[in-house]
Image (cartoon, rainbow, N blue to C red; front, side, top):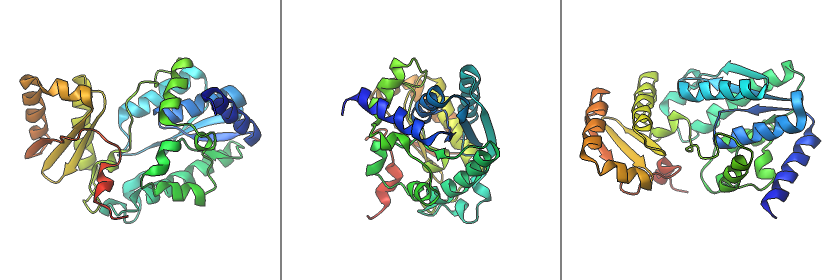
Length: 269
């Protein structure tokens, strides 16, 4: 199926749904989905963004700005994962606990606005990794239009570029809780440290980064371009000093670089 046929299939599916509340994080996938949904359904498509400690302020601000620009109804709800029983202990089903809470709240918003469906932005590339959040998607009857249209991440980026969306080359993002090994305690203070560390790297010109939390050690993942930036001793010194000030005793670079779901490598499937 060609990429344009996939986009047409997406539009037809959304038209069939009639109305939809999109779980909107301002990332590549949910921005594209929201744009197509709003272009297809008009006011019958709304955006819902969850505010929490694991969601950086910059992402929330980008979500607000996009909806204002596109004149899309945007609802911000509080969905604090740390308030969920057991979440802070970071069990292997952490993502399920979070998504289950999130979609419950988005359904409440949908009902308030007379919207019949809730949709999220997972794509075909998400089928190959450990994604317990997709169990919550299935249990709560949440739609996955991008997977229905069989769109991959690269195809979404290409179509986003054609639409002139600012997110077409935006770095991939996952909630800050994904920076912790399973079983490592998650707290508001630790999430803030990770957020500030990653913001520092982004401000320095790094594009795709993760700062993984290993107690008193920060493990940095960067893309190929990021490795080139780190060849500069001044950059390394700046990063080391800043992360030490944030409370990390050791600052290390992962030689394999950035990759999605690296914390899942400890799991035995």
